[in-house]
Amino acid sequence: MVPDTNNVCLEAWANSGWRSTHVIAYNGNPSLDGYGLVLDHDTYKAVLGGVGTVGSVSCPPGEWMHLALVSSNGTTKFFTNGQLAASISATPKPPTGNLTVGAFEGFADEVRISTFANATH
Image (tube, rainbow, N blue to C red; front, side, top):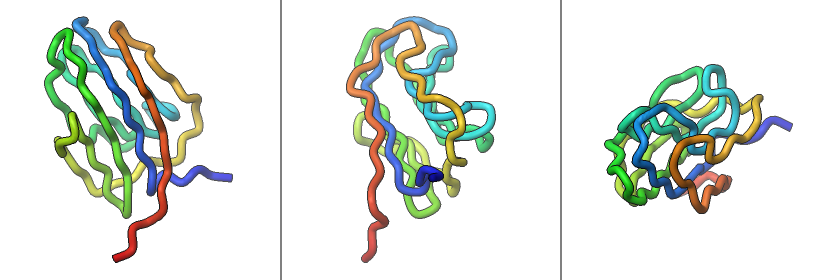
């Protein structure tokens, strides 16, 4: 069964004071498919593998930040601390790799992946 990537949310709390490139949470292969949250030097990013970056925000050193990537109805959005940071018209390619959590120099907490039904209004 191919996982539904059109109605999915990946969220995590992250805290880092280091300036390097690492995965906070990623479902799939960042070069080819899936979706995730990464730290790129001094910037948090939401990424769709094989598509590109959804958006980015500055990483406040040593401060906790809530990050969320939400894909629904053909649009993927990146939220930080509950505020919309960026949006693109794309959805993740189904992930073929493994789920990676906390592969960075810092702290990750309450990492969660959830799916939901299409909203019909």
